[in-house]
Image (cartoon, rainbow, N blue to C red):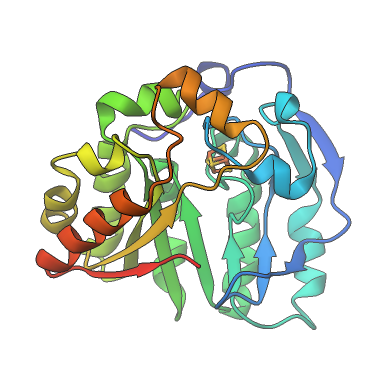
Length: 259
Ligand code: SF4
């Protein structure tokens, strides 16, 4: 189901705006030239999110999303001189619930499509399907859906996010129209991600042939948060990551580390 009513999906206060002063920022991530983040904050509010630490935003207000007003106009101007691969959603989810009403991400995509520049999307939401046609019309596009747990455990770590099974179903729809789709398994939560018995077989069934693995990144205070949710979940996840990699390879899925 695609989200359609703001009141149904946005927890917390009214929409807040912040004027956009720069749409495309240089990316430090490999394979990306620019980062495009249409929102500040993220109402998905995943317990393991370390984006607030990267942006130096108080974790307590991360859920209090601000819309970058004027971002698509700013993007249109910047695209006259900035060319390269654009990472969409590097420190926010561009398809978090507010997007269903505000459409910042869609407006930016339409600007990018005028120039037919390469895009790499990362999201946790099936709302991305709304823009499938725009993505399909781009010459170079990569679509990533991140999944850390099975449906049962998702509610503990990702209360406001569409269920992993929905994300995988959406990923399949993108793959079915021939787009380059990958699943980011991450963060790998020790004793949860590696115990999600059907995860790899579900990925195989969806026809997705590429997986990236993201280890747990424990920034300030995250260990305590995760331990409160599930004791043992903040333990170093190297062993769990290696097990998942082995399963992927055994299933014929190409697998690589995120960084
Ligand atoms: S979807 Fe991504 S940016 Fe949003 S809260 Fe979750 S981890 Fe953070």
